[in-house]
Amino acid sequence: MTTATAAPPRSAVRATGLRKSYGDKLVLDGIDLDVAEGTVFALLGPNGAGKTTTVQILSTLINADAGDVLVAGHDLVREPDAVRAAIGVTGQFAAVDNLLTGEENLRLMADLHHLPKAEGRRRIAELLAHFDIVDAARKPALTYSGGMRRRLDLAMGLVTSPRLIFLDEPTTGLDPRSRRHMWQLVRELVAGGVTIFLTTQYLEEADQLADRVAMLDHGRIVAEGTPEELKRLIPGGHISLQFPDTEQLDRAARLLVGSRRDDEALTLQVPNDGSVAALRSLLDQLGHAAIEVAELSIHTPDLDDVFLALTGRPHSTEESR
Amino acid sequence: MSTVSHAMSYAVADSTTMLRRNLRHQLRNPTLILFIIGIPVVFLLVFVYVFGGTLGAGLGSGVSSGSGSRQDYANYLVPGILVLTIAGGGQGTAISIAMDMTEGIIARFKTMNISRVSVLTGHVLGTLLQTAIALVVVLGVGLLVGFRADANPVEWVAALGLLLLIGLALTWLCVALGLAAKSVETASNTPMPLLLLPFLGSGFAPTDQMPGPVRWFAEHQPFTPFTETLRGLLLGGEIGNDAIVSLAWCAVITVGSYLCAKSLYNRDPSR
Image (tube, rainbow over all chains, first blue to last red; front, side, top):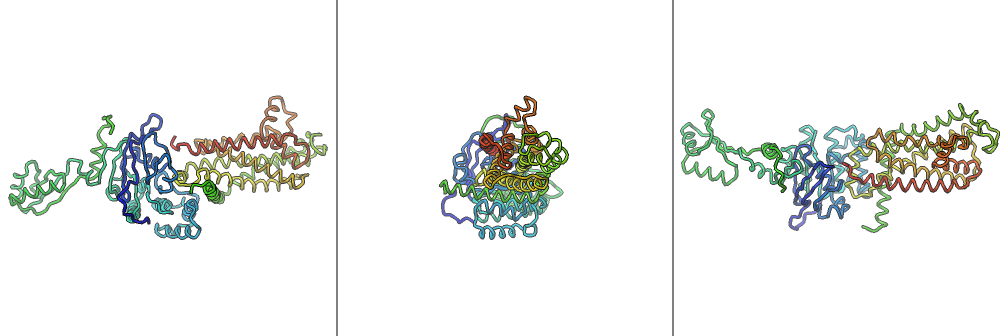
């Protein structure tokens, strides 16, 4: 879609100290975001964490109470139209026109982007085919299934190939098959060089799609990093070793203090954060002692664990980041 | 890119696109125009055929022929009914605006680099076209029940121009009312008084026989000069400063409602 550039990675979104409250309800309590161009960034959090509010602010729909934001290199407050020209918005709060057909919805977008007629027609046909809406193109969007609606929704944001796409909970309420289809479509966009700002309440979705994940809870970012980094934040990861016989198991259990053995399965669970260094040191220990290991598997906690550990505890500390 | 003429041409293009959207919506919901035509037609028929004889006699010397027949009342009534038709269309506008605002597509429009007010102008232009169709039908029924205009082409053009201006004013007013409403139900109720105003004015009967306070109100609300100007243009007779007063009302209502609607549309949607 967009041409590749040789320039160093720039920020597609850079926000500092973003705050928003509705009345006396604080929704965003000073969040900082930095999304590199060409990456997928996931804002992960439960309902009411402030995800949609964040996207609404970044996409110029509503104003923040405080904070400096650059979106696609433009200041959100001073150049909202330049921001709007660079972004596509899809998902929970943005949607389709129910009374219009799929094709008419896309035509509406093409017209609003002032595409020449022929080019608009070509692009609409392309999108209908790519997003598998051809058969229902002449039916009102009101009659679409959930998955088809989301696909139309996404297609509407892509009529002019924006550089930055906001996907607000793109798969909430979809069945697993539609969800996978949606993921596939998102991956294709990423391959085309588009930056994706995704919000989701599904850990698996962030894990599957995102280069970086920020966890939002009660209007604050409680953790940020790659999915792997976040998983390693949480103690409880371990390495499971299986041995060919009881003798090897005995020797290993004596060597690795603090491990938990299972005599029936001939396994030993060794606390370990799963990082390369920790793994190497464990293997070195076993190697020096000449203990034979039949099988080794790493159990890093999944994002679910991270999420619970980070957001499940009472929200008592009031210090700001 | 940022030249004024460029921006203007985009605003026109976007409004045209939004008008097309609005007309498609109207085609998908054709019962609305039936209502907009039906209400004034029913009033017209009831007032001409049920009350017309009596009311015609009561008109006395107030109107042209002075004979006081059903025919005279039809002539007296039709201009008022035309104004009522415009007011009736407003309710549909308020409802469709309020319904539109509940749709996610509006949020999408707001995050796009388009002329913001085009969503509203699309509604207004769509309503005006709808009202124009309704006016033609209602006028046709008026002719069938005995309405006979006494106007030259210039007066006809002036009458149509006035109807258009009234339409513009009331439509923007109803757009603002629709945006201000917290729910679609509220939006269907707030324009209701507009339908009453022709009754509390000279729409159905001359004001000079109304009791004091009612008469004062009738003579100072916009629908009376609207109706009187239209009567003057279509039937001949004295217009006086009703024309100026009508134009002033139209200007005030249009500009006030436009500004109000624009700021309501741009307000923080989450409130």
